[in-house]
Amino acid sequence: MPQTLIEKIIADHSDQKTVKPGDIVDISIDVRVARDFGGPNVVKNLREHHLPIDDPAKTFFTFDTNPTGSDQKYAANQHLCRVFARERGIKVYDINAGIGTHTVIDAGLVVPGATAVSTDSHANILGAIGAFGQGMGDRDIAAVFAFGAAWFSVPPSVKLTLTGARPANVSAKDIVLNLLNHFGANRLLGCAVELYGDAVDALTLDERITIASMGTEMGAIALLLTPSAAVMAYCEARAGRKLAPVAADPDAEYAHKFTLDISQFAPMVSRPGHPEDTVPVMEMEQIKIDSAFVGSCTNGRIEDLREVARILQGKKVAPGVVLKIVPTTDAVWRQCLDEGLFAIFKEAGALVGNAGCAGCAAGQIGQNGPGEVTISSGNRNFAGKQGKGEVYLAGPAQVAASAVAGYITTPAAIPARPAVFIPVLSEPKPVGPAQKRADAAKPTALEGKVWLVQADNIDTDMIFHNRYLAITDMAQMGQYTFDNLRGWEDFAQKAGPGDIIITGKNFGAGSSRQQAVDCFKALGVQAILAESFGAIYERNAINAAFPVLTFDSIAPLGLKQRDRVRLDLQNGTLTNSENGQSIPVRKFSSVQMTIYRRGGLLG
Image (cartoon, rainbow, N blue to C red; front, side, top):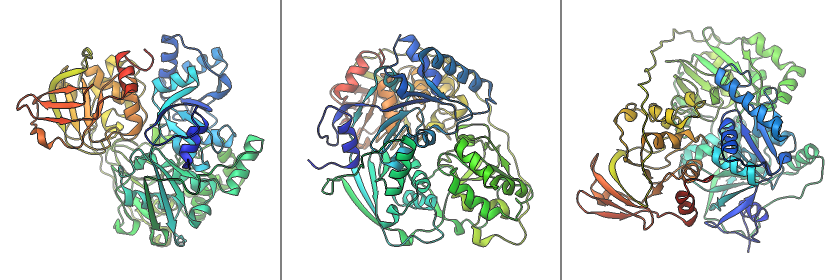
């Protein structure tokens, strides 16, 4: 049977000759990674369950979110992982290495056709070289560390062809922002998207990484690019061996096929709060900025930084504006030093940091304060993700030009004199008192009062903000639930044991953090029903034995806030106990029911 790219990779790593969408299979994982957040919980799970390490040679820690250890909790977590790594013979790519997803490519650990998992929700960046990378929660990663494999549901594949000639002023970041403008955050939810066309074939490795890195923001399982000859040569040189080419079969079947004309793409910027809320840069009406950031796994490669240097050469960052630049890896950092790029950055007035994730993951550089307006080359601008201010997303050329201009603009429109302004700051909202709640029992029929949270694309920073990621005690998590979701900041104070949440599309978009599931368990919430879930979030909930189910429409139920409902997990029904109306919901799969009944993936 003809196979798509992801179907081939999954089949090659399973006991099946071929697979199809919806199949649930165990797949062997070539590379297993835990970062400096998520990593401590992986260690905790392994120790508490007395689990072994399947293959230390395939198992790694990467310390990339806070390489300076500037936060005491991060420093403690990094050291905890180091000690565990020494005990078990695991290699650590420590604070001097850079972003883990880049490191595994550049070190030749992940190659085309390989499988890899990480506590990084952008592990699907590996689609840039035609590999299958997935971000997973700490229970998943602990299981893979211990057993070398993970269950996976084969996703539907989508074929996306870009026709026409790419405009000269359209960067790789602009390409993916145009795709987000077209598809939004959930139209490709749960799909593996393969990109084709002459413009795609011509992409460099750095450009492919930029595009693949934002598959998560599109809701996709992965954006996969068939490796070009140049990419294969790079990977072979790094791996030190000849590699077999990987490609979809010409007659493979796809759930959907789309064709877009890249010649119509334009330089874009995402407005604060949603990466998919993109508009042409020149429609932003010269919005003033306080700061600019170049870096993250999306735009901190050498080609990005050369472009930034080209724009900054002989210019100065606008008065009152802070420009922060963070390379992705130590190798890129050294290359910038050797090529004299750092001298240009410093002469322009920029701050240069250690290689790593920086502000994107609440790291050492790139956070902004209340009221601060930032233009960033990162991949996410969820509320609170990069600080308490507003974040616009753009390509590195636009970021550099805006830093010089003092407002959002393009390299071609940098003014002779920069804009000057006075920033206005506001005080952050204080966090409410802690509350401890006991978990409710877990029968297959649940009854409780509903919270109707009527919004789509509620991301993990809205559910459980990244400033709390160092918390590993579940009892302490509940108090922070939804405190970054506008209108629901007091949810933890109002919620009661036995409550059931009903919400919209793509619930749990974003990060791989397990805490975004466990915080509800800490409050005693029994279940969450949504029109759809972010792929990583759904896995985390299933693996935590926390019921999550999907529905088509709740309109027939006539629900009002705090109505009592009955949820049948086994038969897949939701009933409004106030009027007796019922609707079908997706019942538990056999895998979900098995994990639920034994109290979790590691139970």
